[in-house]
Image (tube, rainbow, N blue to C red):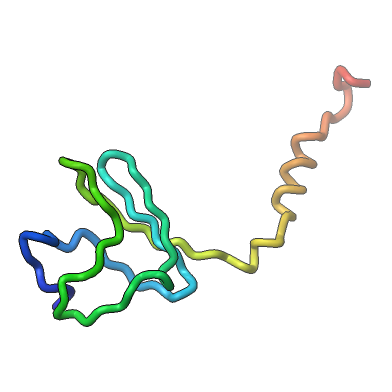
Length: 99
């Protein structure tokens, strides 16, 4: 598989993932820096190029991971889990100190 033209300037490929234009990605460094960006804002290039810069690294820092973030529209307006959790926490049962 040809991913990018590797050089001393751009280094090795750390991660790759399939994404959709409506997704976001999270870049994670070994020093705890997180950068979240929309996939639609990343410039597309051919596979014979040296890639695009998505994160600036401090001296000695390395990119340690990449995570795809998908917005789940089906659950965005569904607060039934929250209501269930609140109901369970609010129940005191018989013989409680509030009676």
